[in-house]
Figure 1 (cartoon, each protein chain N blue to C red):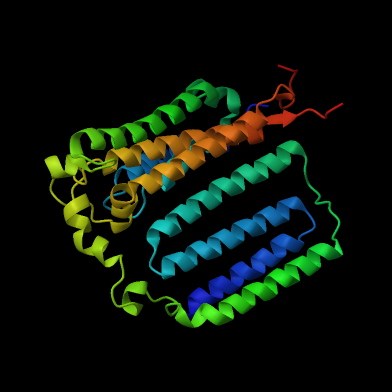
Figure 2: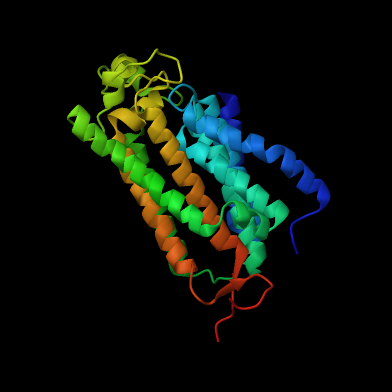
Length: 183
Length: 147
């Protein structure tokens, strides 16, 4: 349990570095450190599916972001810090702290599953009938692709729409091959 | 400029088939072991990103260009949707696991879980193709300064 907290503190420090770093490249790399710390925490908490997804997405995102910053020549972060932003974030932080102070006592203990905390959780059904009805030993995929497949279809639709929008925005005539003539 | 040094190219040539096979494995056995369609697809996209970075985009686009990635993305999304409608036709409910209720395979084998491996593979191909397309558009093309 101490190791998880070590990795979480590491992730928080890396996130602070990512916010405060002067150059875009070092801030992207610290963002990768946040992801790796989180994925190790997920692994220790007993969620290998999420840990695998986190690691893999983190690597690919890191490569894409670094390559995109280098290809577009974005190295410095410019921006002005306004007082309104600071005050707004302080207000949001206070509101969040008040909310969590109220409801944190009802949460399950850190690292414990909801099944041990609540008497009759809905997820008990999936554990009992997952192997019979869906046929897979990996209960996470049973839920994602059988019991809650409609949700997964929605997720896939969101991904499809997001990538369609990104490609439509990026695929304008003003883009050329890097270092070559206009297409 | 076509890719990196010959050391990187050689290592990539040795490693990339295994990465691709590992991605397919993660996607296909998602109902047995941790993993699933999404991480498998990201690993497949990572394989093509590695090839692109090592060999340059001309070589990789000979294998898998932007048109084929768009076609793969759309076809895999359609396959996912078709599994839902087939469940409606044969099983009586949208996304009903009709293969599992009709022909339940032996548990803990690859051919179990009904239509879950098919959907996993479709999601894997979709995610891989679309992430590779995003990488290509973001990293390989550069914007001209607007006038």
